[in-house]
Amino acid sequence: MQDKRNITINLEGHGLVENVLTKEEQDRLTPDAVIQLLREGNQRFVHGTITLRNHREQVRKAMSGQYPKAIILSCIDSRVPVEDVFDRGIGDLFVARVAGNFVNEDILGSMEFACHVAGSKLVVVLGHEHCGAIKSAIDQVELGNITNMLAKIRPALEASAAYPGEQSSENAAFVHQVTEQNVRLTIKKIRRESPILLNMEQEGKIRIIGGLYSMDTGEVNFLEEPA
Image (cartoon, rainbow, N blue to C red; front, side):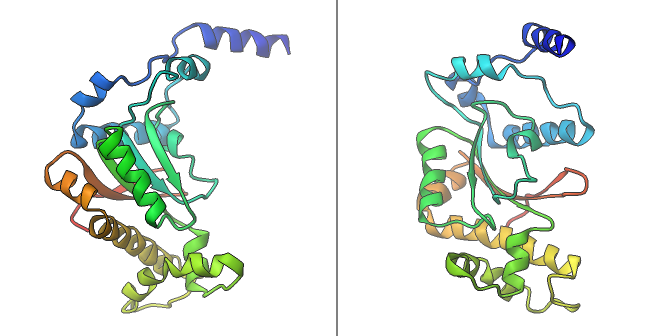
């Protein structure tokens, strides 16, 4: 116990990242620069070299305001620790989570707040492999409010109707296809249903992109081409 306490004291006292993003620093960022920061952070996560941070000190420094770089829409899956996946600290990211990483009015409003009000430069729709919500949608699960939730994912199934192989939740390749389609359709819906975000993207103030998280490697494959 004594050794563990000493290690903690040393870690908290030396070589830690304590700064949180300021408005001036946020203003200088571009959408492409934020994408690059997320790429680099994800590679640190993949290689097990994530940045050591003094969260206690960052909490104190973030009290007066927040100026995150991006908003990430992720699934609720507990195996996708979003801030760690991109090696980001307190005040760096807005994170919205819902099973199946789809958008509704509330999440769109949250994205508009993040970008138009709080100054974030990037919207990322982050799907992931082996997604339980995607598999449940494929299996046409019906249970309480889950039924209506999974209906939000059904358009991705319809977009994958031409898939030539076995269309079941047991086929990892088909699950991948539906997962990617869900990300792409979610991006389209953001642009279609949020004139605010669409205009900001067209003006170059933000970018809206997708990504797929690999459970096997921890790597995020960004889908940057037009969705």
